[in-house]
Amino acid sequence: MDLRDYVDLGQLYAGYARAVDSGDWDLWPEFFTDVCTYRLVPRENHERGFPLATLSFESKGMLRDRVYGIRETLFHDPYYQRHVVGAPVVRQVVDGRIHSEANYAVFRTKLSELSTVFNVGRYVDEVVRTPAGLRFASRLCIYDSELIPNSIIYPI
Amino acid sequence: MRETTTVPEDLRWESDGTSRIPFAAYTSAALHAKELERFFYTGHWCYVGLEAEIPNPGDFKRTAVGERSVVMARERDGSIRVVENVCAHRGMQFCRARHGNRAEFVCPYHQWTYALNGDLIGVPFKRGVRQDGRVNGGMPADFRNEDHALTKLRVATRGGVVFASFDALVEPLEDYIGPTVLRYFDRLFDGRALRILGYNRQRIPGNWKLMQENIKDPYHPGLLHTWFVTFGLWRADNRAELKMDARFRHAAMISTRGNAGKAGEVSAVSSFKDQMTLEDPRFLDIVPEDWWGGPTAVMTTLFPSVILQQQVNSVSTRHIQPRGHGAFDFVWTHFGFADDSPDMLQRRLRQANLFGPAGFVSADDGEVIELSQEGFEQKPFHRTLAELGGRDVADADHMVTETLIRGMYRYWREVMEA
Image 1 (cartoon, rainbow over the protein chains, first blue to last red):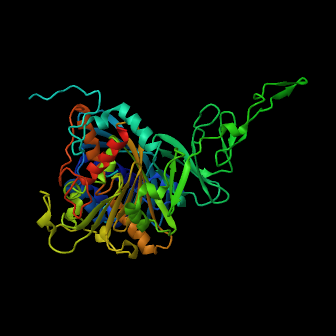
Image 2 (cartoon, chains in turn blue, cyan):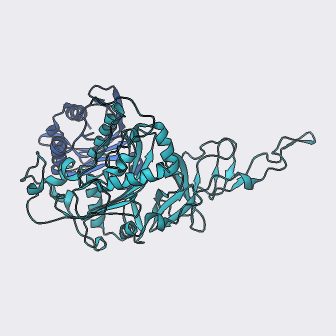
Image 3 (cartoon, rainbow over the protein chains, first blue to last red):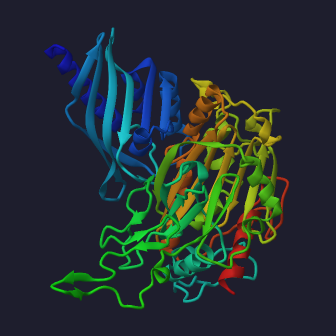
């Protein structure tokens, strides 16, 4: 891949982190293609070949349905989240489809509380170029965190 | 009258009934220790897992009964054993892997070796070490392996579900569950081979009983879980039954999704939007299954350790593992059936988005439990109110009642005050 693609890829990762930490949840589905995969998966299920995910979406419509749930129907204690995402490593490029990965850590800060480590894992991604720029065709968030501290509401 | 802000030394109930539950029942470390002893370690069967998790001889799974770590394993003859994860020698928790396959259990510290049934089969240097013509050390002459097995739990299985008890005198599992609730247990676990789909694990910072109460509370789903209401999965006038065992400890909430009318007519949810539809309706691609026999959802609470979920096509067990009075780990095991078509498997996995620690209609349960615990902790002299539908305890043919919670505490008082 050329340098421009790598710079764009870095921007995609950084832009995603910025979006999911912004509180403007409508930004999140726009990082994906219309038909897409978004899966938040315990490392245990991933490594043992179990198909269950904590969240598993297959279309931009499902991501938008999740946004509606976050905003309108899911009662939750409000919190901020902050993603720290490592530089993506490109594993391979097949027919223009970039297979890349990056480590991530998400910190949670509840109102009037200390900041804590919330969810830690890695992204395993497939990225494609669209007229609008690079987009995720697939994003797996495979998390090490053995226990979810109560609940996950916002997108990882 | 000014309320007293003294924390009572004994648990104080306002009456002989159980419609007002003292906050101290959730905040007292001493009561929690007593609960573990009386509900989890004696007189009760606790869920430890599914047979499908350990299909082959030698397969094991580390799991828990109350706050005690145990290991469930399948023997060569196919039977299932459950032993406590504490070495008979120096007390070490010898099993750290969560699952695997072993011919025997070996404690890493001094290599004490146990058969899968817990029998001690190997002790290094038991007869001492020969050196310069004499024997050094060794266990005393009267040491017998038979006296030093791992703690062996009683095991009962039914329909592929494994229960264990530390109590040798516990009643038979079927008597424990009782005929009323057993019907609903057997409806879900009718002997079909299960297929494990995977796990979700969360730690909920609230007292473990609150999760039992949550699934004995048909008052909240249409109010807290606005997603259910918005997308037509829950209505307060759905045909429903609430049934308990003879001692009121277990319960089944049985409901059948209605088709008639607009949900808005029976919704008190202010954010309810009549016109709202899913952008991707595959979340609710519900296909009725023969074994439902009518009801579209049956939530079964088996006291104290597990919840059995059937919500349309999504089925799971939810294992309650207390962590002190103020928290518990909640382990979801989603499964399907070995004869599921690929479409049905996909459907179960899609509908799993509704449940679990991030689920559209479950994440908020954990949240309200945490915030309930916060309320209890700041005001331990106070009490909750569970008087919807009256103050009595009885089965019901509607959802507008907190009778199952009152029933659970009637049983709780019976056992804790004995």
